[in-house]
Length: 443
Ligand SMILES: [Zn+2]
Image (cartoon, rainbow, N blue to C red):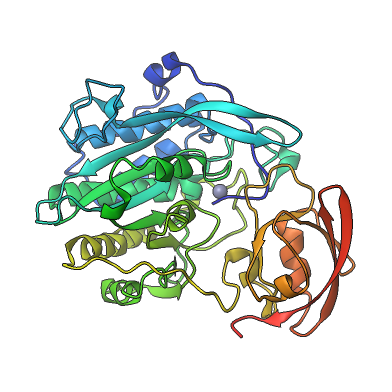
């Protein structure tokens, strides 16, 4: 899950890609026989281990994680995605070469008042060929595998300096769940083909998923839906949040039918926008779902540790997701994409508090911004009516100084619907004071 500021990474070398993952034995043996809970535990322990140093995009640890995932897909005998510059990686064929699952690209990380940083990095992708008459169509299942690395600027505990941010929940949990789902689907394929993707650069602003969605290896018209798992490792009281259910009218029913024993307490939310990789696909007019076990105090800190995960919870998410994906892949008809008209706020940044609704859309990829930058406002919302605009940086809300999204969430929560609040924003070089009348969530 993305946060308000971004991190820095080093440029990788080809050598690092090859010699990666040697600090600790990567659990790849007996991949079809290991019980799910053991496999999930072993995989996430490795991904969140100090050896990978938090998997920051453009670092050796990130490259190692990518290679680890690629080796798994190779062990599962999945098919590779076409790579025009790699004759060795035949399109759609089983390759026997782990690096055929690596999709290298140069991520351009915007820097304020300076040239963008160029990071050599990679997504990982594989295909589980469908066996039915819709095998030429695809369901995309994805999760980002990058995290903050040692960067403190992007962390919620910057006072600790350049410590490792292990990112066990964010997003070791989604990564291992996707590998587990791939294992199950490889064993018993679906009608449509499954495109499994692990994204890099999410924490820097959905860089990997945007790259992938901009250069889809299959025709966009043939994609049924995209399912994203980001932070699914801290399940409490069987709670699972599912975003995106209104991005196709059929999705609510699919999600409901997939929720069989052990039944989860699902809160379904409509919107397809949000601070994670599914948004890159929603922006391409594809139906999306994002599964999420909610924020916690260890989010983006050095304490997002593997021992704090609910591994059985990850297994439940994998069970549920497998049913959703099978349903998407096996149903005779295509989904009908629809853009969501959100009446109220429903993202994590605005879910807390006192039922207050503003309609601001935080730009969670906005870098070292002091304040909270908006990527947009919802049409007709109090933010819109008050004159807030995309690109505005909220620096003061009422009498509270805003330095980041957490200040903002607190400030919003301290008010009640109907309050008229002065909002000070930076707009380019100018500072503008606006007045907003807060609305009620869901109204
Ligand atoms: Zn994150």
